Image 1: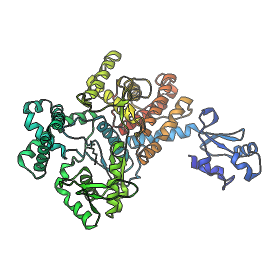
Image 2 (image 1 turned 45 degrees about the vertical axis):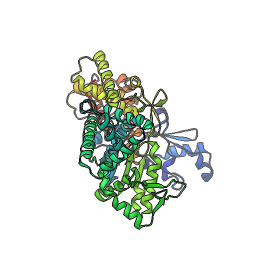
Image 3 (image 1 turned 90 degrees about the horizontal axis):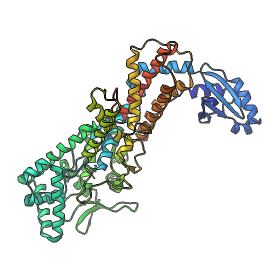
Image 4 (image 1 turned 90 degrees about the vertical axis):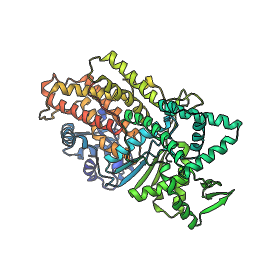
Length: 554
Ligand code: ARG
């Protein structure tokens, strides 16, 4: 619409007027768009006030109801009914496809996300990666990309030699079965404590990993068992979060696929020996990338290099994303540079999507000695808290357990996604679950209100729009922005744009809800119902893009 209006204005001065000059006034009484005329004064040799007056008179367009000069500005009031009518019809016709575009043109984007380490607790960092990565995937799909979500499980490395050794010495099958991750973590911690006193344990650990690498059947069977027990625990978390993956190829998958990359680095004369280890030297003050240790063991970076190439061959991605915490920035910069040095121009399409920490009272929430924050417990606490609120406020809700799950989990997801991912976020369950303020439940509650109203209203009928009040107009302006927010969020790989959008829409809807009669005002009833159902469609879609559910009642 800005473009349309601009065409009208350009008849007046084609050179000077451009789209960026049109502003959106904060207050509706100053119009929907404003054109400041100050920068035109010099060229046109007239005072801004005079220019504004002339322009205001010249503006005529079916989309504009009024143009008013005021102190050097032209305030433009658009024709609310025409715009509202066409927007509501668009949303009703397109339904959940409203806001979609084909920018991606079917290009494949691989997304490395979640990627927890087996035999270790699923950390807050893995939660962030899962939630952020999942939302980015949903956003990219809405913008016409195909996505491949890869859970690159941390299931390989020298630590598994230590774990095997510890299990053989002190472990019990029963205990692992009962509480796999907790037990394995304890064994791992004990290994480190005892190895400090007795170095022979370290030697044993290294030998055990070597056996694993060489495919020793007994070692592999144990490792495989640790892995499947751990994955069972992770799966419970993914079920709660409602996240699925297209591939679980993790580090171990690349164990027997690293020789080609090492050979290639060698052939291209990029491997340098340094203290017995093999490294690739890098530019820009970056430390060298370790490829093989002096004992021949490969490293995290070696596996990531072969995984990156494998992904390119398998999926021919247009972009390859890694949703991993800030602390691994150097690692991904190194991997990217090694790939560039190998001559792969697609290295430029690799992008690390970093994020900050989750803090509890200002300090990192993590696996500390002995005291671990178990994510599953956190999620279940949130669900229980949501359940008791529902019990107190609205005990007649059907499917209470399902609603509590949607609200509890949604609260955690929303509090993560509403801020830019690079920021550290403070974790406070009680405030996340408030139904007022910028929270998940606040948005879900707005959706439930809209749903309840629509249920009461019955079938939507044909409508005409003859008058749009300020409350309605606020909603229309937000609804109209949805496609742009979807596009911007995908371009910037930034789900917080959608979270903020959802807050704006819920707020606009709630003030409408509190001030306008929908069902009792016959004259405007069907138009208002269609407005409410448009809000419901778009709110639900926004929540879906964040990976959240929208219960019909709560
Ligand atoms: N497992 C790793 C960790 O927990 C994260 C893996 C990230 N992805 C990757 N391709 N390196 O720290």
